[in-house]
Length: 246
Image (cartoon, rainbow, N blue to C red; front, side, top):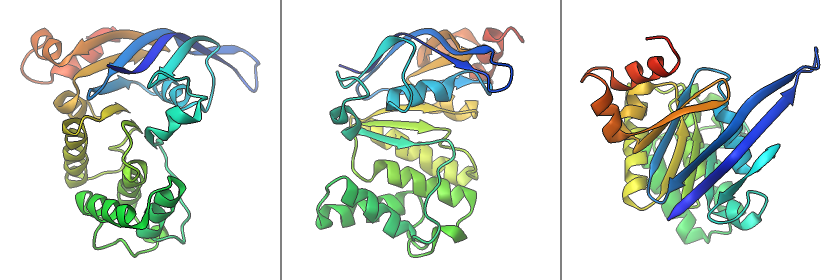
């Protein structure tokens, strides 16, 4: 079952200063199935975040169409099934981590019993159980990132979209997030995420799309990644080859 369908989407921006058109996404098509972990990698400005923003309905494509769980991103029913972590999450500094998640639960219509269980489980999974009553303004970047991941997951969505989820995390934090994403897959959840950390993408993704200059260069399955390159630095070799830098 296809959870996210992208068909021939393009997006062009106009420069504020020179008024020149810049193509952020150029005629991209892809699909993501249920219980699949799909990663998108690319250099800065490749168009990764633009794709995510279009899937979320924050911006609209100039052409093409997007369906999330069979509905366009503008349909509120599609957004109810999505959990989202932006690249640079910002939360109210004076809330505690627990208060932040309680707010998310309330906005999602969860009852208190379900909310309390979800909050406890997620905070423990990402290693914030002991800091749950601290103000977010005291959190490091990595701790804020982990709180943001909890915020995206607390309403138990079917589709999880994460923009650079490993950003600011130390090795232990990355390990926790990797385990969490793998656990989501086991539960039948669909995960789409962008990352600059190729080793993490290589370890957990079922398929990986490589973007450059707004173009989806190629999509590799996990099997193809390990068949295409040597045993060491598989995805890095493939990535550089697609950018013409081998």
